[in-house]
Amino acid sequence: MCNATPAPNLRVHHHMSVMSRPKPGYQPSLPAFLFLILALLLPLFDGESMINADSDPARHLRHGETILSQGAVIRKDAFSWTRPGEPFLGFEYGSQVLIALAHRAGGTPGMVILTSLVIAGTMAGLASWLLRRGVDPLLAVLATTSSALLTSLHWIARPHVFSWPLILVLFFWLERDRRPPLWAFALLFTVWANLHGAFIFGWVLIGMYLIGHLLEYATARDPDLRRSELAAARTLGTVAVVTVLATMINPYGWHTTWHVVEFFRIPWLKELTQEFQSPDFNTRDLKPFLAALMGMMVVLSFRPRPRWTHLVCIVGTAGMGLIAQRNITQFGLIAVPLLALLLNDPWNRHVGVTGFARRFALGATTGRNAPWMALVSALLIVFALSHGRIGNHQVLADGWSPQQYPVAAAEWGRRNEVRGRVFNEMIWGGYLVWAWPELKIFLDGGTDFFGGRIMHVHSWISTLQPGWRDSMAAFDVNLALLPPRGALAAELLRDPEWVARYCDGTAVFLSRAGAITPSDSVPRSRCVPAVRQVGGP
Image (cartoon, rainbow, N blue to C red):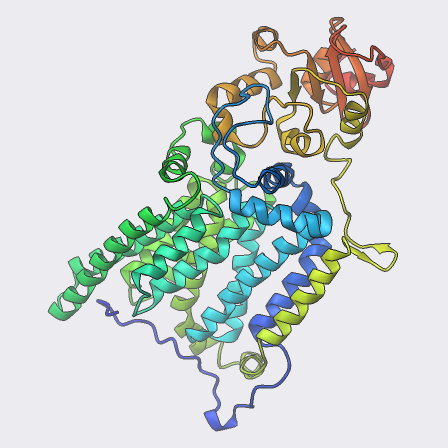
């Protein structure tokens, strides 16, 4: 693919002759080494967070188990009392099945191991691609590490992780001079649409490359270059049409495609969902993105100008990351490797000549990929099948954190067969769907299903806005499962119409007087600390 400006020299300057390069040994290659590090360390140091960062892993697990049990996708809601029996469209059903299968095999450690292997494989694939493009090995490691750091905000055992390797596959194909046939793009998007709704970003990425080719066509002076860029743009136009049609090959048909498009156009989504809000750079977790943006500005100041396709992708994904925190992942997977390509020539002139960089490059040219990655994957699968145990030692917790979720409260409720219209903490909704399926919830993290009205009512009641009691009465809420140190729990504990049925350090379960049996209540003194925490008497 030709360009209006000379492409950067992507050859690696190892400063040694081909004859002096050592033959490949049996040690792990650079990508394999990165895979080993991530695959082994993520379960040990981030495994608990993958499961307990929010309750969506539990919700996806319940949905996956339901699909496996009934042998069909979910088409009507069976988990809430606010929208019972309403039409349901599961645009993540394929990933949910994989999560459920991992849990059947190894419990929550199985879910952690599966997620870790996908993340490690994605990063190893990125490092391998950078090396094939001629990026200096040390720079490739730094770029891959930066990508990992930016995606780490979303290292959670949720379906979106399964989109990451597919994003890279599409990215690699779009970067090739000779792109794959149309059927390959169609197959990729068919798989993608049956795994997760992030296939919509695939269209965005194709659109970015299409715009880049059109800009090259508009700015080029060479007639041959103009013809080739226009031909590339036309090809991508056809690819876009084919991929849109391919996403309709799923159990829900064209409704999946339309649902995902409409979902991202919801006006209240940004208001009520943190991951759709713009990043707050005062928080520690988002500082790496700020540093990456500053580095981007430095790299883009170099001459010559990057090809338009690269520039559009870098600036476009940066803009997406500034609009919504969840898009920082796309910046890490697309913009960072492109910036590494642009930085490679000046890097080789100033850093690649140093002794450390030369020795690092020498070692990085040897080693093997597949045997080491297969070995580590096999060991981790065996570890998962043991439910995270090594001998008599439970290395990975098999279950959900009782400090994060109302584990004991749910056990109490199931044991006493409590039923009713519960107002639950939103972040607990997914856990309750899994751990206490007999109790229908108010809502969970499936914001696309519950819609703006229920989301706003929940927010209105939770934050004690004027008329919140009327809202609870209008929905005929007679149960509440809440954090004991929250403002709503404190208010209900003061209210003589509400009785505390269960209380511990994680959750307080309340009901309207006489709403449930057994009629046993918890002395209010056990829950008084909750009132004091919010300034009560």
